[in-house]
Length: 271
Ligand code: SAM
Image (tube, rainbow, N blue to C red; front, top):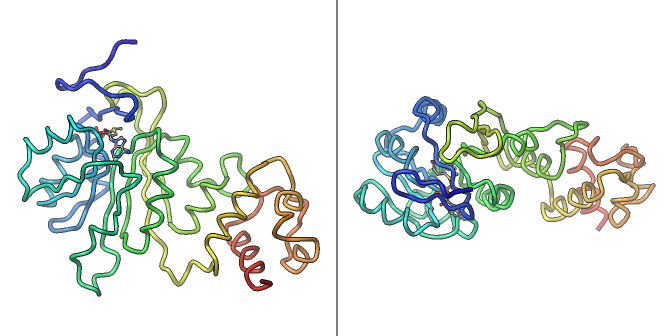
């Protein structure tokens, strides 16, 4: 396989670089985001700027987080500091909350996050971003279709797992549309999808101990073919299942998000 060059830039595989090049798809994504002048928005991985340019045009100013030094240099050449604030480095370590520092205390969750995410880090980046959900208004991402299907999966399906439960606990999510490999240069091997995520109001979340919820969900899906009685042995016994009205002989994939929350809260209450 030869390296792929776009606009004089050699795409780097280790940074998951596939650049959007289909103007119709770009327009459709921007229309889905509906950027309004003056909004606080950050783009993860602007790359060669396929989405960056139309976003800046509509917003006036955009924050971006980019890891590739060559691409960062291009962004500085192309845009003025009034148009773009470039945060150099790894989005997995970036403090997205810092972007809200200048906002009024009563501004509410105002941050909008968008990006055609590097697919090699999609799960860790989603978990990292979930940590800022209380300051986020919405997030719109392009990801591998297979990951988006897992994010929005319903109980009882093969795709339903830890990612579905932990993200659906925190966000309302919807798959907007699919994007074929031919829309990128170089073309990825897989189909992509656009997903929209909006944080649920904090008073609707319900888990008294979210870290405990995370541990229980991880255990329940660690060995998918085993029953809850088995996988959750360290957390709950027969009497707990009975009190919860949950059949311990089921597998984790049968439980709703609310049932996982109920198990976690039962453990918290029991001490
Ligand atoms: N947004 C561009 C587009 O749609 O054409 C580029 C998308 S490309 C799939 C992913 C981008 O994320 C690249 O620009 C890559 O350099 C950047 N990137 C990869 N890993 C990153 C990380 N850990 N933190 C920040 N940016 C990263």
